[in-house]
Amino acid sequence: MKSKTPKTFAILMLASALLVTAGCGNSGSKESSSEGSTGTDPVTFTFFGADASPNWNRMQDEVGQEITKQTGVTIEAEYDVNNGGDQKIALMAASGDYPNIIYPKGNLSKLVDAGAMLDLTDLIEEHAPNLKKIYGEQMNRLKYSLEDQSIYTLPTNMGVDNVAFDATDGFEIQQKVLKELGYPEVKTLQDYENVLRAYVEKYPTIDGQPTIPLSLNADDWKIMITVTNPASATTGGSNDGEYYIDPETYEAMLHVKRPIEKEYFRWLNHMYNEGLLDKDTFVQKEDQYKSKIASGRVLGLIDAEWGYSDAENALKAAGKDDSTYAHFSVMLNKDLKDTTFQPTGFDGYGIGISTSAKDPVRIIKFFDWLASDEGQVLRNWGIEGKHYNVVDGKRVIPEEIQDRKTNDNAAFTKETGVELYSIFSARYGDGVKDATDNYYTTRFPEQIIAGYTPAEKETLKAYGITTWKDFFPSEDEFEVKEWGAAYNMPVPSDTDYNVQYQKTQDIIRKRIPEAVLAKKEDFDKVYDDFLAELDRAGAVEMEQQYTVWVKERVALWTGKDVK
Image 1 (cartoon, rainbow, N blue to C red):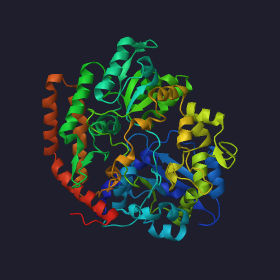
Image 2: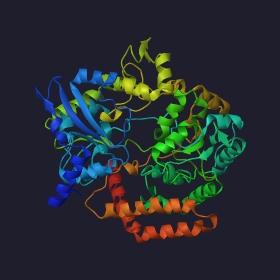
Image 3: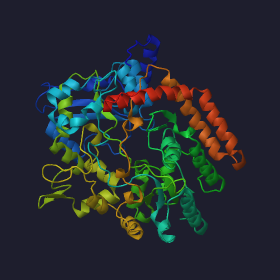
Image 4: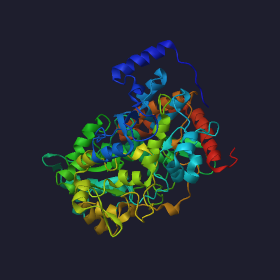
């Protein structure tokens, strides 16, 4: 699967020029240390993160300063803002110019095939007892592929043994809407539509501006989160990115090709033609989407909380907590089951060390310190006496700190750094306790409930539940997915697959909006033409190749002889 084919001189020159234009420079040259890989002597490592981090404060926050004090390490970070690292990592791979540490998200294969990533197996074995302890029996899941069993990244966007105590996505409705309508049942698309329609008819404007019943974020790759993925979720599909994977045969297909999902997009088309879907959905930029939410006039969303939390935090800071959002499990009909909490086992995107790093031992030791009990408590809770206290042996967040976390979260995070450093190393997930009988994270039932706003608590009480998760089927109603979450699975970049995949994505991102915006009488033709175009673009062959990789991952992780 690995390929290290030399790039042409022309590509190298073009990529280098683009990198200079982008301000990357010689990213590996920043690493410096006066004493090598031991001690806490000052050292700076360059880092690229494929996700945005709007609250990053160059480690000048309180937690960042404490990390530097304890380890001597400073991170000089660059974060992608919009495209998940796609363009920047492609340029890195072409030029051979890498930062010391990389969080590549879905682009790991480009770096592996370019020979950019170090195999961390021996480094972990020799220098990282805390990493070994945390990953434990999950270590096999860190391996890159059945053919290449190197460990190139440490999965960090998910905690080991994580138990989700709350729902942070689904279909959202403002608290004030639910209260006004007497807290109606919301279980199907029709229920959801009825709520939005009833409120906008009663209140066509909010603060002098037109009320928006439903808005979606279709800017760049976010179209997957708020437009296409919900089609799978509302029809019983498990979240495997752009695919549906048959749990019996492991065969993969683009989930939008499932006949039942056509009915979800028909509903979106209906919502648009009824004037209930924001007419700007497919032309607005992400900042415009968030600005509308922050105004308090968007009644409903279909999004993950991380996708709109900045805007929701602005509502809280402005004293408009009744305009924050409740999370509902919403299905096409009552006969279908929401798989949001189907367990995937341990899986996730991760952080790795590039071949440009002059002192990988120091870096792995840095990761290992962050993975220690001391490092995890610092990252999750902050500094004792400032951000939490220990009372009768229990870590407790003072009321004034909790108030800032709830109602002024962006400023609080930027100032303190609490929960800002999770991707930089391994960690235990929610629900895991340390040797002091305290949770490693602050996301456990009592603390989650304490973090709700008064309006959220009022809504939850009205529905007779304690957290939003209570609206959803629980994880113990499902089997663990043997392949994890397919969207985390790296695929080789040296095959035709990526070209075919990009073609299908371009088609989906063009044709789905056309179908949603079509006249009702034209919807079937537009959608059927869209499916035919996918197959002409090689979707079937692409799905067959992806099926092979899914089966290989099952074989690697379970030891099954999967044919």
